[in-house]
Amino acid sequence: VQLQASGGGLVQAGGSLRLSCTASGRTFSNYNLAWFRQAPEKEREFVGWILWSGGRTDYADSVKGRFTISRDNAKNTVYLQMGSLKLDDTAVYYCAARTAYNSPAPITAGDSYFYWGQGTLVTVSS
Image 1 (tube, helix red, strand yellow):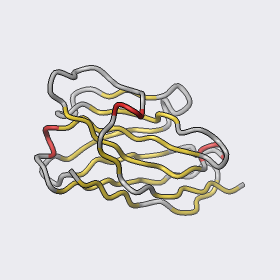
Image 2 (image 1 turned 30 degrees about the horizontal axis):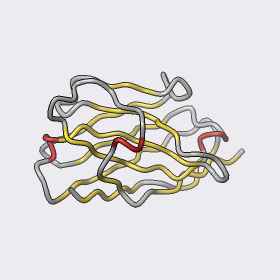
Image 3 (image 1 turned 90 degrees about the vertical axis):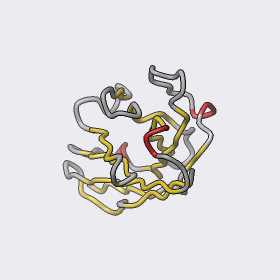
Image 4 (image 1 turned 30 degrees about the vertical axis):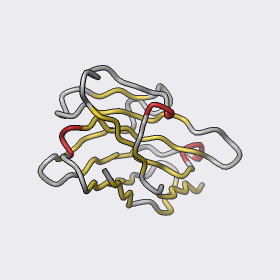
């Protein structure tokens, strides 16, 4: 499956932004999706995860209550709605996919994901 992330940009602290990740090539609902991010000079970190059906989500503690993941399987798209943005949220955000077969629980390790989008830059300014 090919993933294309979009929606990044420059936003002021406290503001909101919605990222999108559109898939092609395979049946989208066969995959659990996740968002990761990587800030300059920092390691990649897990942001959030959503089950193939959209019926379950999981978030990193750092974004819980501020970010929301959703998906529209009819549009082959997963979204990351980001609110109350902080300077520390500045990073390149990546979407990733992993087959949903026999995988009902959140997976936060990036190495477990086989498919990745190209990343979209989010910059939060003061």
